[in-house]
Structures are given as C-alpha cells and as structure tokens.
Image 1 (cartoon, rainbow over the protein chains, first blue to last red):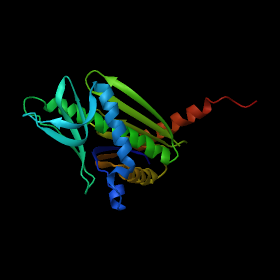
Image 2: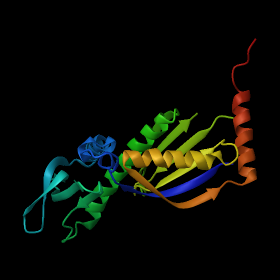
Image 3: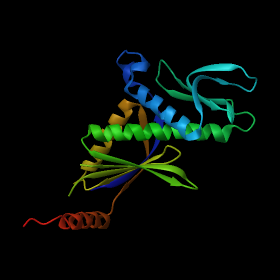
Length: 146
Length: 76
C-alpha cells in the first residue's frame, strides 16, 4: 500500500543537546545557517547578529536578517537548553506579514535541506526542483527514487 | 516496481509526502524512518493528515510503472 501524509513542521535542534554537546555541534546547526543565508539572498537582506525593537534598542540573536527595507529585522535564536528555534521580531507597526514571510522562507529552506539529506541517507536518488507560483509563492518539490 | 517518495514543501513550511510503490504497510515504516531522520536533523514533522491510497490508485501507479519499464531500450 502507499499513502500521502501531510505534516506541519517545527525546528528543534536537540540531537547534540541530548548527547551532552553544545547546540552549535548539532547536525542541523549548519543547515539552519545555510537556510538563513539562502533566505537573505532571496529577499535581498543581510545576515547579522542583532535586531532592533520599536524603540531602536538592539536585541542579540544567533542570526538576524535585516535590510534597508526592513531595518528592524527578524532574529533567529536557538534555546541552549531545549534546542527550540525561535524567531524574534518587534512586529508593532505593520511588520507582521514581512516577519512571517522571512520565517516561512527560512523554515522552507531548512525543510528542503533536511528532506534531501534524509532521503540521501536512506539511499534514494534525490532530485530537487523549485517551482514559483504567483499566488502560493515558492514551492520545493523533492523526488527520491529507490 | 521502483519505490518513490515525493515531497512537496509549501511556502508556509508545510510538507506533503507521497509514497509510491511500497508493498503492504512498508510505506508507513518508511514514513516513520524518514520522520526519525528528519527529527535528528532538527526538523520536527507533526502529521496532520494521512490518506491511504485506494486500490485503484495503486493499480494505476503499477500500470504506469510497467509502461515505463516497457519503454526501455530493448535488448537485441
């Protein structure tokens, strides 16, 4: 039998923490960084390590994405105890949609990298394709054949 | 018939995974293995919907696969 499953996703870098190591050594850390840089390129943003709140105060993050069109920026912070990846942004003043778009792109890129790696680990021949829909935006299609 | 996994990742990060050509319940085992590896990598995939394929859909997949096999370059 074959089936179709739909999933909601969340990013939690827990593997290294569970082994008593630093979260920076987690197999997902570098992939998350790669996903963030890919998002920065797609949205013409710069990667840094702090965001600003409504009052202009800096908030430290593991990574941040900001630019001339989005000076406040979106931050990405990994909880050192739980590995939970959090997205930070002071959305007051109409930044909610933009912040969500940045977050969704990072999650999508990260998911694509993880799925590709996971299927390769299971010995599938993997192909990846990016499709652009004017309404739904970017869709990533990954095909693994065994 | 070859086994195939097709994964669609939407712009909202939601994932749709289709398993093709898996005999019996082995697709559920494969889904669990895949989810386990994804979790190790940091991607927690929480299933929201599982739709088993109908016998007609499976028969169509098998027929399609056999057609593709049949179109391979013949040996002389």
